[in-house]
Length: 215
Image (cartoon, rainbow, N blue to C red; front, side, top):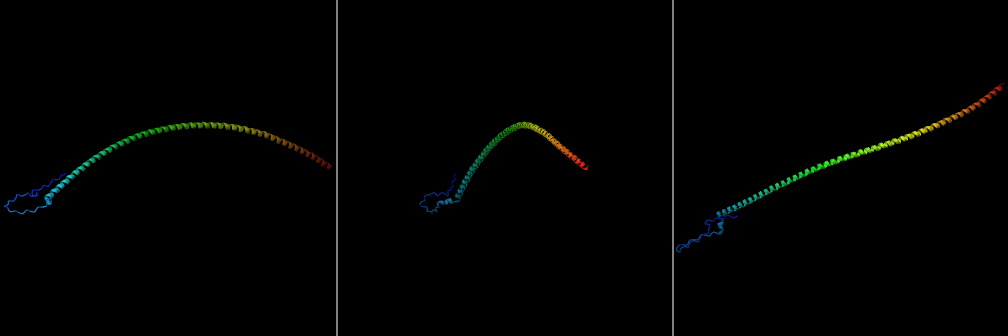
C-alpha cells in the first residue's frame, strides 16, 4: 500500500538562486542555512506522516478484517457443508441401521418361528415315543403279569398237589398209627385179660386153700 507523499510548501523548498546583485547595490548578509533534517521536524510534515501511517494501518486492518471475515465465511461454509455431510452420512447410517435392525428382526422372527416349529415337532415326536414306550411297557408288564399269574397258578396247583399228597400221606400214616395203636391196645387188653385170668386162677386157688384150711 502506497502512502501519500508529503506536500511541501514553497517556503520549505531550498531558496532559488538570487539574481546577481548589481555592482552598484550594497551586498546584504545571507541568512543561516537550516540542516536537511529540520524540514522533517515541522508539524505539518509530522502530521502528514502520522495521517499517512494511520491511513495505511486502517487500510491494512480493513484488508485483514475482510480477509478474516472471508476466512470466517469460508470456515462457516465448510462447517455447514461438513455438518450437512455428517447429517447425511448419519442419516444414511441410521437408515442402514434401521434396515439392518428390521432385517435382523425379520430373521429373528423367522428363527423363532423355526425354533418353535422344531420344538413343537420334537415335543410331538417325544410324546409319540413316550406313548409307544408306555404302550410297550404296559404290554411287557401285562405279559409279565400274565406270566407271573400263570407261574403262581402252577406253583399253587403244585403246592396244592404236594399238600394233598402230604395230607393223604398223613392220613395213611395216621390210619397206620391208629391201627398200630389199636393193635397195641388189643395186645395190652390180651395181656391184661391173661393177667386177670392168672389172678383169677390164683384167687380161686387161694380161696380153695382158705376153704380147705377152715374145714
